[in-house]
Image (cartoon, rainbow, N blue to C red; front, top):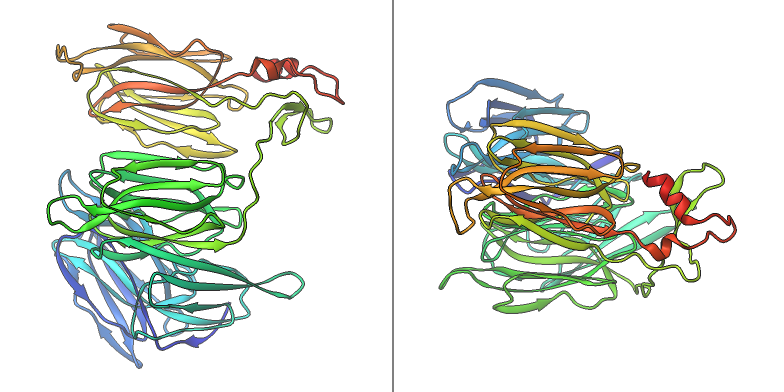
Length: 561
């Protein structure tokens, strides 16, 4: 990319990290010459050398005096400059403050880092096409949080389309910066227009327009904006009285892009919403906002997601003031709002256009003449039966811990579990339309033996699970009841038992099918477990293949035996 220079307006992005420590702000300079990082299990401190009209200016040291390692990022000034940072933030000790645990710096020439430990919540600058001209954040004995000042660069002959953020704090109320790639316009009120110009292979310029709605909610916290993408694939929420945090998996021209986790870390209920993208499109959101405590600040209390196929939610309490993000004639391509201990407010970027009416299409099995591999295709065969919705079975076990639900996927590829006097924890690697997804770890305890179960997916599929549960404490109310043993069955083999087969026996449904997800309860142990089961369709298995003339049952037997 060739850059002609930069405008006279900067934007403030972040900070990412915790709320502890004293606030610091280095201000805005021409560029960054050097970064000095002291790090170990966290980022202990950070210091910057800036350039101000050709002169070197050192900032104060932000953080404490502890230092296991010292790293220096010395840029080749003036040709090299910082364009982005990323990292992780989390608590270093239980109940301690959230700190910056790792940092990575990207210049227009190369990457530097990572420095520290890459553990916790990932963050990155949701903007490209700018250079870093200053830093701000919070610090105490450690670096508690970090944010940047970005100077937008004017780009000439762009070759890539990139996400464009809006609604950051600007240095000047009426500043508009325009270049050959996009125009960014901020308007008063709840609506702003972001225009992205794209040049096709024939050299013609097409203008895509994203309209921003909201945000709805309170005025607390800091501004966040994930930017503009092609669509939304997945949404993760945590809740406790209100919506504590939200994180979005976007689609950008067929590529999966995860946004930052926006909000706090005190959620005890996790919700995961997976859309069947690109056939299922997120069109609008609705929800409620209000105070979680008497005379407290307003935060987002409930969210409902609407697609061109169905509704997901509500997630949270539908109390307070309601809101809605306009009509169905559009695609949500980004989120913005305000964040602090909760999601204080939320808004959306919408690509406005008329959506086609969805039509259910059966997915029969067939064998290709070219490769003789089993595949699924979108074609209509008269009399074919639509795949039934997955059944929910269980959970079996105790009532202790907190509920969790991974949701529904295409299948299960791996299982990690730790066991001792009971099953301490379990974690799953799922497949969804050819992409792998790891669940969070359900349970606790780092002791015990670790077991990994790897299936020959997709030829080997998980069909049932059984095991035993019993009380570790003699608690008759079930809060001391944990899963003692687990055994897994596939269409090819038996795995286990893992743990002691003592207590009350349980088994998943005997309906023929494959397990496509898990749910349950967990705390210090795995307290309970249940499954999402996709039934085999007998009617579909009895269908013929038309032009091939071979029964589908033969191909299903070939795949699962």
